[in-house]
Image 1 (cartoon, rainbow, N blue to C red):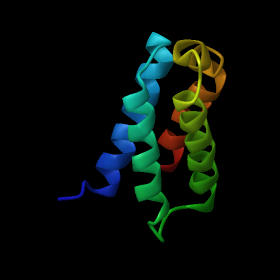
Image 2: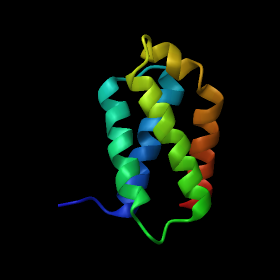
Image 3: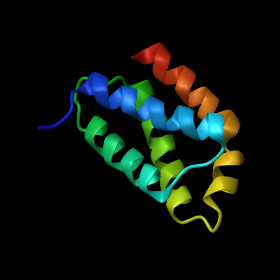
Length: 92
């Protein structure tokens, strides 16, 4: 059974918040971000501003998966992580 939009957004925020607060993460979390974003992007009711944010997070997760040092990748995106979390809060 697929999870609902609100639950997907909460899971997305939870993963981003964990990356932001702990400055570390796993490839599996990046892969989960990608799956969540793909699922959210097919929602026809989603705001265009949110789609732009999701595309940025998707790029972040892809780069994280392919990064030689995921923790360093996460650390270098601290400002974006904070901004994305704030943006998602304002649109959800």
